[in-house]
Amino acid sequence: MLYPKPQLKPSGDRALRITFGDERSLEVNRPVRALSAMLESQPIPGLREMVPTYASLTVLYDPDAVAFQELKSRLAQMAEDAMRHQDAENAGRLLRIPVCYQGPCAPDMEYICGYTGLGPQEVISLHTQEAYFVFQLGFTPGCPFIGPLQEQLHVPLMQSPRTNTPKGAVAISVGQTVIYPRATPGGMRIAGSTPVQLFQLDHSDLTLFKPGDRVQFAAVDETEYRAIQARAVNLYDGVEIVKDDR
Image 1 (cartoon, rainbow, N blue to C red):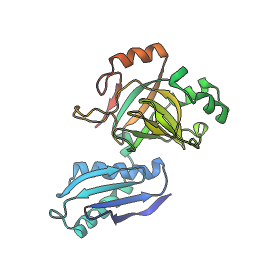
Image 2: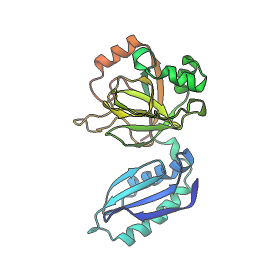
Image 3: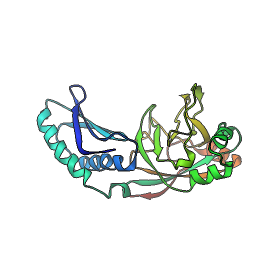
């Protein structure tokens, strides 16, 4: 649900959280991205960092540079303006990401097909047919939470998470897609794998994705996957930037 008015609450002594709703949806996420864009173009003195999520934006600030009440008052007005802003979802980049949905790259494809009643090609067609949004980064550095997925692809989380989800795993569950930047535990169903790099400490961008980006997955076979993997050493290797409106 989108709240009638944004809710502003302190988060520790150097942060303030602005919450717009209580669900993972484009309707709720739209003002998050709009407010983030407003603060980038109209920076408030003393504001140090922004952390956008599905339904909220947390701002970190220097209390010696800006008083809490002053910051809260300015953000409250900007947040209400953001709720009236309707064109934020047209901003950002569109990135095309190669994914192999075959063999060992897709260890949960059989489960996904069994649960949804779809065939493998139907799963692939649905997952590649439209551009999704990057709602937030989290869990591990550079890990994007992407969606919303079509209802036909909704599958539950694993009852017992894997202790080792491979780097590059493209996983779906609870209405979203996650791409694992490195091998970590994880409880989502792996539908495929991408050979591209998502996080690089010595790159100026650090992460491949930014909140507000759009993502279009492109199916490749195992031979293409291995060829891209061999040359995908740095961020953006093997990635097609279809559109860049940043």
